[in-house]
Length: 188
Image 1 (cartoon, helix red, strand yellow):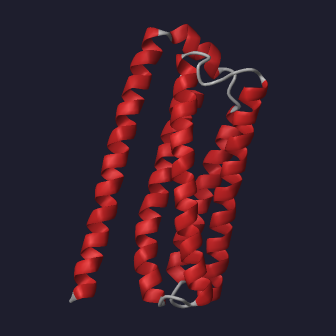
Image 2: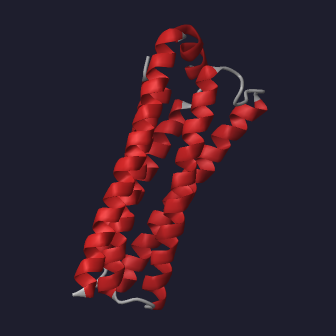
Image 3: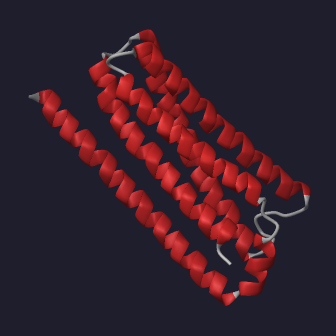
C-alpha cells in the first residue's frame, strides 16, 4: 500500500514541478517576444551571430538522448545490460550537448559578446544558462539511475518507476530546448 501511495506522490510531484517550470519559461518566452517586438533590429542583428548549425545539432542530440532513455526503460526488466548501455549513450549525448553549448558560449565571449551586450544577448545567456543548469540536473539524475542499474543497487521495478519520473523531466528539458532553439535561433 505504501508503494502505491509513494508512486502516486512521485507522479504528482514531477508533474507539478514540470508545470511550474514550464510556466516560468513561458513567462520568459512571452517577455522575450515582447522585447523582440520593441527592438526588432537589435534582436535580428544579434540573432544572426548565433551558430544555427550547433543549435540544430544540439536539438538532434537532446532528442536522440531522450529516445535512448525511453529505449533503456523499455528493456530494463528484460535486459539490464542493454538498458545500462542505452543509459550510458543517453548520458554521453547529454554531455555532448553541454560541451557544444559551452563551445557556443566560448565563441560569443571570444568575440567580445557578453551578457550585457544588448537585450537579446541578456535573454540568450540567461535562458540558455538556465536550460544548461536543467541539463546538468538531468545528467545527475540519469547518472544516478545508470549507477543503480549497473550495480543492481535497486530492483528493476524501482529503477523503472524512478526512471519514468526522470524521463518526464528529461523530455521537459528537450521541449524547453526546442522552444529556445525556435525563439533564439530561428524566429525572424
